[in-house]
Length: 96
Image 1 (cartoon, rainbow, N blue to C red):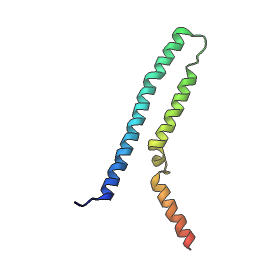
Image 2 (tube, rainbow, N blue to C red):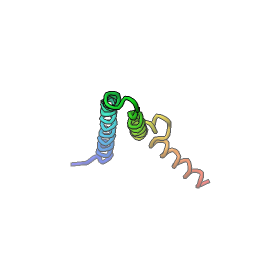
Image 3 (cartoon, helix red, strand yellow):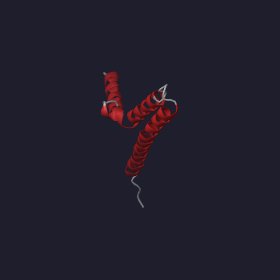
Image 4 (cartoon, one colour):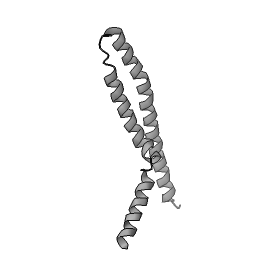
């Protein structure tokens, strides 16, 4: 029985990426439900001070960096492909 390690590697890599994407969407859904709940709690019980902005910004900040880790670096041109291209470029320059 012959194993195709390249195919297995690609499968494991894709499986890991799907897990990361699922984690991001879970984070997004939790954020979408928690922030309005915190706004409601704040306005219902302590309407004088709007403290809900602090967790809203914190959760949004965390969500942005989660997005950046899962999708963003590839979107702005700093993903794995960029790293590999840059390494090859620097190696070429070093040999010259």
